[in-house]
Every structure is written in structure tokens, then in C-alpha cells.
Picture 1 (cartoon, rainbow, N blue to C red):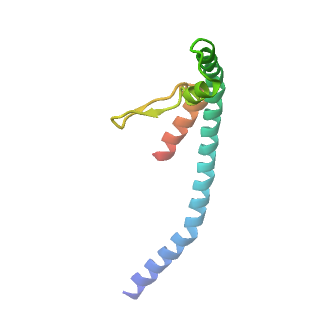
Picture 2 (picture 1 turned 180 degrees about the horizontal axis):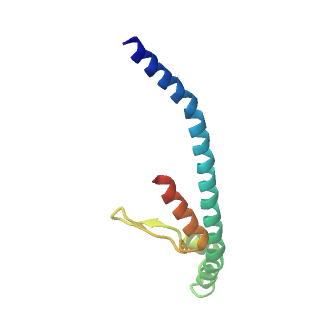
Length: 111
């Protein structure tokens, strides 16, 4: 019985020493995934900016609405949004290489 307690205590101590290393590795990986997400969002923003600018310009020129109102209306054009049924409508440009890489990296991390 005493030998079992010693083995359990040794295993617990070994787990305690291994935990910080695993957590540190996980933190590094999570930071890497966050950086991939930032790259994705930057690429999407670059693609969406001219589209939003054109929509705002048409809103001001054709609809004769105040620029502030048009900017408010189209500020989030292309972003993911929720529906009244609680579902999500996917945003635009998540098929960019940066976004595909971020998605695939997150999928691998979750496995």
C-alpha cells in the first residue's frame, strides 16, 4: 500500500512539473493562431475597403444621403452577421489564402 502511495505521489509530482511546459507550448501555439487570424482579418479588410468606399460613395451621390449615415450603414458590409433565427451569415473573403491557412491551423489545433 505504501508503495502505491509513493508511485501515485511520484506521478503527481511529475505531472506538476510537466504542466507548465505544456501550458507554455499551448500559449505559444495560441499566439501563433491569433497572428494567423490577424493576417486573415487584415487581408479581408484590404479587400473590403474599396467595396465599402464605393458603396458609401454611391449612397452619397445617388441616394443623396449624408456621408455619416452612409458610412454607418456600410461600415460592416462583408462582415459575418447573425440572423433573427440565431444563425450566422458568413462574411466575405474568408476564402483568401490567409484565412484558409488560419482556419486549417485552428482545425488542427482542436484535434
